[in-house]
Amino acid sequence: MKNLTLSILLIISYIGTTNAQHKGNYDLISRQNVLHSGNANIYNPTVQQHINKILNPSTTVFIDVKALQNVEATTYTAIFNVSQIGPTADSTNLLMSRRVQNIKEELKSIGITEDAIAIDVISFVPNYEIEVQKKLFSKTYTEVPNGFELQQNLHIQFTKTNQFESILTACAKSEIYNLVKVDYYIENIAEVYKNLQTKLLKLIEEKKSYYKTLSFDLANYNVAIADDQYCYFPKDFYQSYQAFNSVSFEAIKKRKGVTTAKKQTSYYYQPLSYENYDVVINPSILEPVVQIGMNIRLQYSPKPVTAKPEPVVKTEIKHKYYVVSPNGTLDIKALQTD
Image (tube, rainbow, N blue to C red; front, side):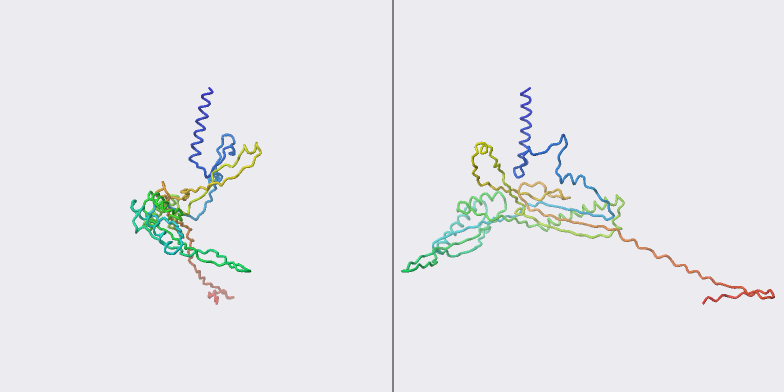
């Protein structure tokens, strides 16, 4: 019986560990702090609010459609900052040229030619030091040049993400470690927007048919429209977190101080969530991608009912009066109304 209980506990522990691994460290929650109330499930407050949302009927019809497409970059450009110092201008420039040339030779082996490498000169300035000149009753501090500093940005273009590791290795061999950023480029962005537009127009027609089934003939409505399109790159979606635990029960028991250490900051790629989109093209991604989206909002309002003018019926009555004379004769005359 004890062995059976131990086996069940081990299985539960394994399942909990597996779930924690899938969850990741960026949002680590202590399971002891989770409140349980009987067998009831605890929902995210935002999700619970959405489930219990009360719908308010209206005669105005809204059609909101959103589409998102994940697009792999056609080319990438890695930018490295390079700094070189030397005693003279010529020697500084020569040392920089050798470092860059070594990188070019290394990158040829992975198919990156010199045409895919560009140099952007940032600054080339002399460095100064203070020279002290002692006189009989005073000292003079004079700035004199003691060398030069050349700073450049090295742009390296590549087409496959697996080439980036070789680029880092080549730069490290020349003591270049300062990676500024990696830019993503796509060539067919107009075709992507056209594809999204086609998907949304098809979806709009389906929704119109749905409303018509509900006795809303949108042909009898005035329509207003608003649309939007956007493009986001991976650099816009990197977030940071720190995964550590600084609680030390041993230090509390022995009443000893704790020497804090620098905690490493980790980063992860968090793309746009799909929960608010009607159409998602290429939803499963393995690496950071360019996310291109389009939104269309239509508002249908009932057309005002135009009142038909009622025909005016004019009734004309001709009045007459009768005059009776004393001798009994009857005289009929028309009544003048004007």
